[in-house]
Length: 320
Image: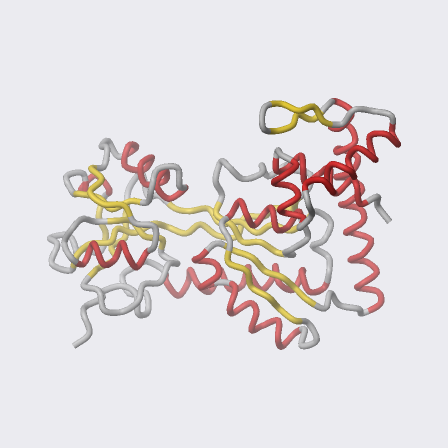
């Protein structure tokens, strides 16, 4: 068995403070501090140095972490091999993902797992991308589906195995009486004079739209801010502005809005990834999940194709 104090050190390194690591581990801060002091005494090194409200890892801690990451990856591989050889399953498989993934990708995968692994209990957790990686590292989730952002661990992070899943194009959401609403596709610069509905600054969607508009030669005039797609659709339907919406995102019926595909350069899209703890991908249930996610993602994008006629999503009018 791997010394559990190494896991505590990994969590402190990931979260930056003892308090945040304790929260993620469901420990008290004093328990986390005690374990790290005990580990430091045993190894006769200093592991952490207080720096403002956070802590700084010493060179000894970084050396220890590099070995710990390798140990945990090998441990996951060993457990996966034993599970495969013995036919013993995980018992509970925990899937986490951001809102669109939790609504469109994870449910059909969970349904498939009920058939292929009926003895396994499947749990779905909706979480923001950064939180998904926290859940994986804390062993509170087994498979994550996330949108790639600069805030996430890099693809070479030794703690995780990350793989591209799909690119999710963004479409323009317009009122149905807008002059461009019945076009098959539009260029982004055709929307330069429109008022825009965006998420709050600092959020990945906000930066994606701002960057795309800047690349198209204009700065969007932000009229309103909305976090939920349904809120954005309501504002667009009321003629208060236009928005971008990922093709995978579903909208409830009843809004007088049209989704129109973007063509030309730029044509922004969200890059969606899967991630698991490094070494765990060979667990039978996890391997099945990753394959099911790839199949589900492929079918989803094929069924949506362009946004000319996504089932139940494209030309939406108020219910009669």
